[in-house]
Amino acid sequence: MPGGRSSHKTTGKLERQLLFSEALLQAKGTPPQAATQPSTTYQEMANPAQEPSMDRILQEISAVGRRLEGMDNAMVSIAAETKSIHMEIASFQTRVLGLEQRVSKVEAHASSFQNRDQELLFLRSKLTDLEDRSRRDNVSFIGFPENIEGEDLHRFLRDTLPRLTDTVFEPPLEFRRAHRLGPRRTGTDAHPRPIIACLLCHTQARQLIQKARTQGPCQLDGHTIRILVDFSKETSDRSRALLALRPRLRPLEVKYGLFDPARMWITKNGISKDFYDPEDLRSFLDGLSLTDSSTLTPHRDMMTTDQNTPSQDLAPGGSGSDHQAVIP
Image (cartoon, rainbow, N blue to C red):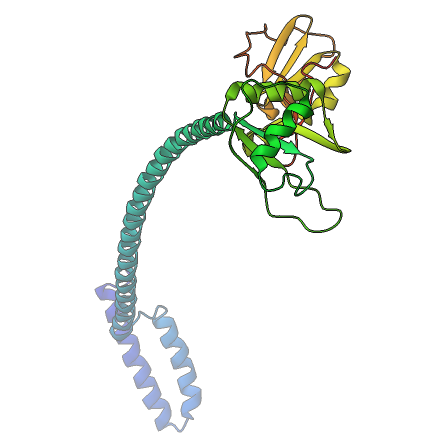
């Protein structure tokens, strides 16, 4: 049985025999090398499995211990880094939560801003309407040469307008204020500055405007004089934008006209529709069929006699020339 007591006894006996044989050969004068060669081979045959020594085992154990110690240090480092990552993730979560709350507040404010935008648009329209109403007694005159009025502009208008419009005003025209617009222009080809006048009586202002629309441009000593309505800049710009869409209305076989203040009226086959916003009119024209009139809504009553009067083409200063109310 390998590794038992009989194996150890056999090995010891063989070693003693080999030692005795070596001593005998040396006594006879035989060279030791020839004698030792079989001995080494026999020893290898006698000990075929060389077991590792205790020192080697201890060295391996120490190496394994050092490796385990290095792994422990690495695990400690990994644990520290993992803890740091967890802390950063927790910090990111806190920041993300804060950002979500801020975004929610911003969205809430944005929705309130949208409502405020609508309110601002409504207030802006109201302000424009109030400005137009405050200007309804104003009349603008374009074409009077410079310095033709002399020293008293009020007297010049009071004496000239009845003759210019061939109208007798009773009582005579009275003005709250009248003046030319803008600084004096220089140069031989400079156009005269327009005159704007605020009449004391609103009825006379409307009578003057209506007479000018019916009569058209007036002539005074070879000069063409236009009498225009005075609107706010917003209303004037809107009126110009509506008038710019007239070329698209002409081929549609509809009747249309621009009424005060900045209202485009379209009628076809007895059905009418009003437009105050140029974008609404443009969208309507984009989808309007050339033959179908069902897209027009039934005509509603005009707002007032004052606002139902035909509008005028607006001049650069906010006023304009005469314009037909309905153009076939």
